[in-house]
Image (cartoon, rainbow, N blue to C red; front, side, top):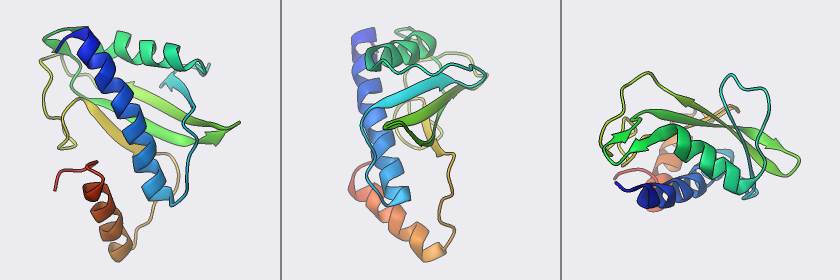
Length: 136
């Protein structure tokens, strides 16, 4: 995958992450983000710089992409969705289907309470599949 293609993929991923969180939280989220890597203290608020931070850390070359990257929605603060990232310790490799069953390295998570009721979870799963956010 070229760097340009990966940049496009990351843009799409960030929108999907917000949609995923909206379905779980059952409310709309703003589209503006705040981002930091786990262990960092300062949040990045500039949307272009957030994209650059993700691409620079995860994309190492056309066949060298870190395969397992957690993106955790921590909450909403000051009108921005706070997302924290973490790259797992696996070696970079070609772009492929990830642990989540979706193409690419990103695994979505939430730092807020999520439903545990079985019927509710099945409803969420169905919505995610309908939106194309989970494989069917």
